[in-house]
Length: 103
Image (tube, rainbow, N blue to C red; front, side, top):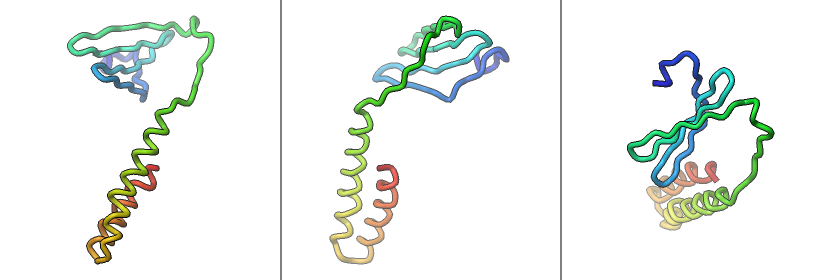
């Protein structure tokens, strides 16, 4: 296994898809990408000397995440507050304390 191999260091970067996931491992002169697709493992080796640039770009995923957090804050936070009793205030406050920082 790669985690027992002293030549590789696992990067704290992990991607997941609908039916697959990937982990990234750094060797001395290359980056190893391990894609788990059901029961198969696919390995891809990218040498550092072949990398010409690294691009970072913002996607629309943050819009969906923000809209989901806002919806949860409104449903689970504001609705119990509108009940007008102590239990509703506590439930609404706890839910707002969870969802608003995530937003």
